[in-house]
Image 1 (cartoon, rainbow, N blue to C red):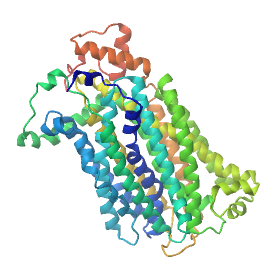
Image 2: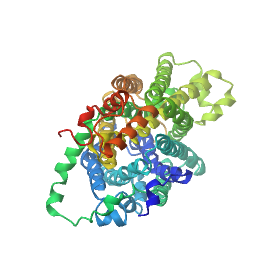
Image 3: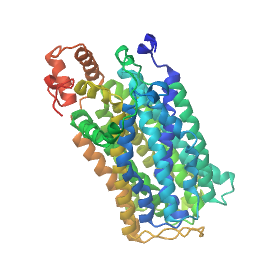
Image 4: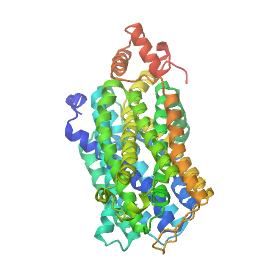
Length: 537
């Protein structure tokens, strides 16, 4: 590999080419978390518990697959596959022809076991793409601002794909005359499945893996070793747990889980909240309710897109913690407004809503400020907060391998991506299963699939949904804020860290200054004397 590759600089096409991968990374999750629970309970006659199990159980299997793919991709570097194809890109290439299978999840009239099996298959494909893809931005640059640009590009793509995921059902219902809503979801998933394959091709073309150093070029590719293969699980879990020794990573996980779990709970409960609380007292059909949900989610994701654009600059200038605190304040304000709506039941809202037939933007023709306020203000506030909650954790991830390198002397982008996704999936599994169980325990009755009109839920079921929608996200967000309160990563501290890593690589054993020592020790959680692989595992 040419020496020039050692200093290769990313350009706009690399930022957006790599970032396009979040059309799959976030787009699939926007469809799954935004619509699948609603689809199962409304059009497939599955109970809330069954829907929750389908969404939750596959995530538990990823306790093995996420770190395993991260570990294997890290360790393919000095093999024939790693040298000739790429230790990350080999996984991406495998997924390309298989991703259109996403549409199979949205086939109606199947059994619980069918939906569980196809969802497990897609989640495996999703993980095979996600883990290697997430490592590439950290491999392409060490510069703080360039890393933030990569994170910003992916989040803008992510929010754009979420807008498409929320808007497509309403668009397709209109195109199809609103006659076959389950078929609408299948067409949406088929469109996304094809797009997923296309964006993975873009990622492969416009991204690169960390170049080989001169010393690495001298290492001979490793042949297959059966004994080493048998040790993979042991070594994998050793590396997995070693990541938790990093103070910055532990703090980062609290931000990550606080932001994302709050959205899992919200995404699962919100469509049911719209159908049972906002649309209470209306004569809406399933299709009109789906159109209203679609419009509100689209508006929320547009607000998230705006939020990401602002958050990029906030994180670059001040670091992630301030951005996180601002974000949760917006989300909490939105949730309090939804709670206020539930308790006050504003007069005339239901009659005004009946007049728009599920078309959100037709509310402006009703000349009702109350209708406009309740339909637009809370969901926009939620979107402004959620966009930043999405951006902050993945902007921080790009810097974690730099902190880890100071401790271990190694580059382990894959294992960090694996651990993050593992923690995310297991926590998401628990959140969705518990959310479905709580909704079911509250007395929620699934909608008969052959009935066009929505059935009325009991007051107890509605109360449970509201308390879950409001209380669940607030609890996990505030816990995340408390744990991460002293998170010290920002542009200045990252610059100090990278400088000290270069000095450690050159053989230095003492920091350049006491200030540098404090910064590095605060981020790593290790004394300077124990850095660069000198600590005992």
